Image: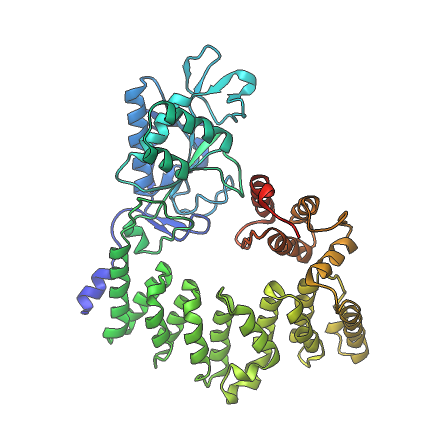
Length: 524
């Protein structure tokens, strides 16, 4: 590795760059889709939004597909809705579209006489394939041709074309009628998809692209499955990550090393974990901190043993606390076990000279993890911390107990300097734990739901109980709402991490999943 090679690796290329995920990313040097072009037009009502920006790949895909449709069906004009802002980020009309790889495009329709018609906006088609009371009918032939034109584009890799299930099924049937091969039908089936946690997409198609190789090298992150036959140039990407790691390990050039670490943070490749762990021992503080930020971003369980080993060598309490925060922030199979150790015997995780000084901070973070993941096994350890001399630890333990037990026991007294007031809260928790010691965690949850007016007849573990739990996902009590998600996972076996979604989108996800799988769930 040379400095010249390192600078070349870290140089930003010309053209658009999609960074991050579609739900939390940004867009740099965006390509603009003109509001009118050959075979397409941005809907008039949407032009004032200025959301006609995306990656080079997305804009060119729309232009090529529109030209193909206009050539095959003269007079057809593809209606275009939102792509994204010129710099990416959130737009009011969608929770995604933030990284330049998403676009909403119109559906082709027929009029009452069966003639081709170009719509002036999005119109929702029902299961009868009609919209506007029969004014429009879903044009199976042209919509299938559009989907095929999009998928046939060799310059892009499409991850999803979101569409309602009741429109997807006729599209697949039309493809079969037209003689589609089994391979093409399988691809259509994989890519056409009704999202489980948002608008079903019955009034427009939503295109989502995979990250291009160049964008991956600058921090573009795909989320979700990689379909069969998709080539994301993984071997080339791994080679690029290896080169970045060599910048860190082989050069003595702090600025270039820090830039390489920042790029490793952006690309989030687990392949970099050994290099990042080794860099935690650097004598340069800026490099250590850049490596830790990258480990937090990568967030894979493989990093945890190395982080725990590093903790035992750290002699600076502040740095030890930062390392442990990253450990707690990584989802991995032993997360609860590590949190329980921090609650009960934090001295096992840290060097002797720093354990006492970092224990309170570690316990506060560990209590959040225990509240999110723990069941009955976490209750007594959390209860013991209600008597901690540290007010932050007491409050964190109380909130975690509320989460574990689903009980709405007030904890305001824990903030008091008066021991008698704190003792009342401790006594209330002791009374609950003693009275319910022999009950299951699910029974604790049921008691909490019913105390807030959500009653189950005859039991929680039945179809009617699932329906009520799905309704509770948007409850104003955030503890109850979070526990509704946890209990749904326990009862159905469908464990889904909904922390990336809003409560409403979590509810949509579960309603969609339950409608599709209720017949498969066997309750005890």
